[in-house]
Length: 342
Image (cartoon, rainbow, N blue to C red; front, side, top):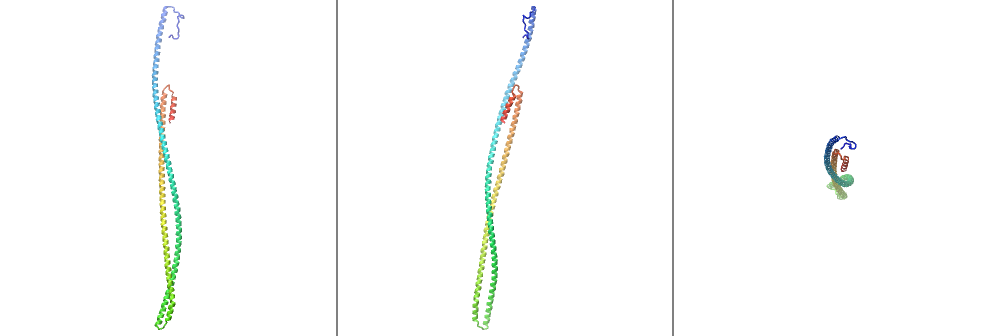
């Protein structure tokens, strides 16, 4: 190397042999200096090349580790995505089962409500029939009481007339008997005095006999009327007692049927209330379970997103520490994959 100077013997002419020796010595010295500088430069470049080679090997190893870590993270993300999809399927299955159960329970409740409505309609119809029967029975009772009161009034009037007639007949009989006794006493006195009144006695007895017959007939007629009135009174009393007994039996039967229907209706209402309470409890449990599962899934999703963000930050920091790598492109790709998995 001549440091940019070109020496030519035609351009410079040395005066002597000693000058040539001097220039050769200078050239040798300069050549040695240049040779030592070239060796130093070559050693420096070799060291730089070795250092760059070592750094390149380190970067390659770091890149390999980074790719392994990215593959591991992708596998974790895929696993978490499959778990999230499985949890979503389980959640949808649970919700569909809950919806089917709720629909089935709703249909059962509607059927029970329809049956209960039919029973209530039947009970109301029976109650109306019972009320109508009770009204008819009350009307018949009023009619019977009216008839009974009329019978009592007629009985009282008949008994009063019968008593008056009896008193009159007793007085007439007593008067007739007294007249007969007086006549007989008179006849006895006349017989004792020796007067013959046989013809007059026979005539008197002949006149008294129709009166006695009439009195006996009236007495028998009065006894017959009394017995007939007593029999009629007993017959009406027995009819009224039988009616009241039948009315009491019918009323007891209607009351027992009404009490039985009321107990059945109350039992059905209690059963419906219990089933409604059970259904509401199950609905509350299903809703609570749904909320718990949803909150758990949301919490796991948030934790998964946070973990992915943390891993993405770590990968971004690792990519930033590597020189010569397109960090923005890799970061955008990883974020796109993360969003697609989420």
